[in-house]
Image (cartoon, rainbow, N blue to C red; front, side, top):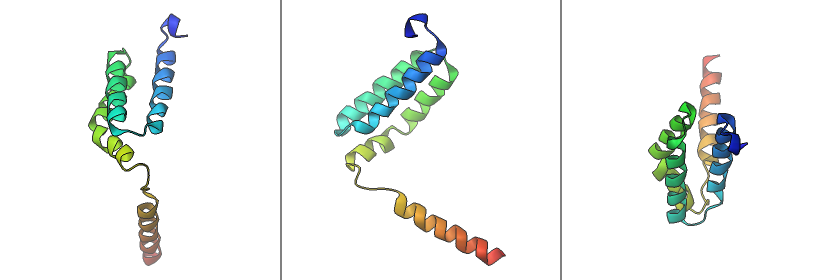
Length: 94
């Protein structure tokens, strides 16, 4: 499919390529991967790919921090507390 240069094939390749990020263990390699992926996405003539690349570049440090934390931390605790606050507010209103 890539030989035909289909936009949908390149978009699929980009999506699947980004999934490899979650396997990185070293922050330096993860950062290089993100840089290369976003550079490749910017070269594609697909507006959504360019939008994706800009989003990755804007959040690069946050993504690399995920690898630095060695995946030990989860936002589950924060989400739980946020949910409890939302439920409490909902009950208070009605």
